[in-house]
Length: 345
Image (cartoon, rainbow, N blue to C red; front, top):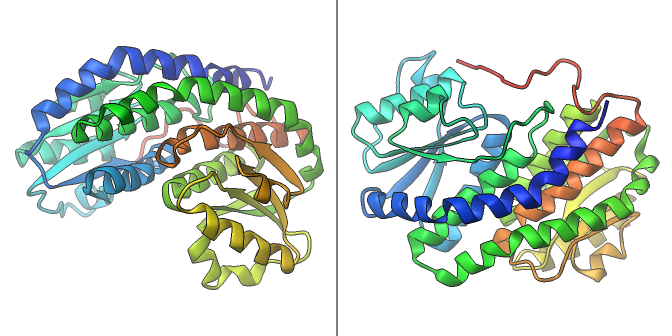
């Protein structure tokens, strides 16, 4: 009990290193074949994979000037009114590759003559078989119900697609350093994980991120909900200002993802305002000025480019959620009410 998830979280540096070495050439070949065949990207995904798609919106937008949209699968299945996909590259992201609605988006894209790519941990899955190109995460079997290593490897796949589309070797070199940075993050977080005891009776919290780490806010929130039954609500810090901030009362826990980068000054300033109205901060950052404001701190390494930071900043959230489940007497490997493969239509 509670060991499978811990093992898989700890596998991430090795899985990321293996993926980078084994898939660099394959991803380069795929991007060469699809280059100049599309003007925007449409991604079909659910759950954790949907959060990876949110990362794609930022990484492709910031690094490649490519607009990325999220598909509405029920238009393809239940409503039977799929949109025209002219000039789209269509990606399906799914750890299992089993969900019929995601497969249906890929099928329709194929019928419309659009290039399709699947990012999945099962190269024999229906999603993979339906796609023109396959990026196999090769993360090994994920036995715990909550996805961890397949999420971070999906982010690395998207970062590598972005880097190869731009032809930027410096960016690819930076991606190659992520496994080592993630290992250090794991060690730092495990060292500080006993702090989570403080939140044993927590029932509600908010998770804030912005820019590249908007995806991290959603994924951290999802892990907390899946594993602990806590109502954890993700927001962009900008959106949180527009109304939801009224929910903050004295001692209200707010989990903030704030690595260095263009968004840091905004998040740092906003965190001061949250303290002024009584919030208690849980912070993931490599900047002392915001870590020092937190009741609970998860430091990350300094040498982390903002555009790659979501591959790393989610790790403290994964371990936080697992530890909180343990503190609440719950089974973090097999949370009640969930199954490993979820099929939607």
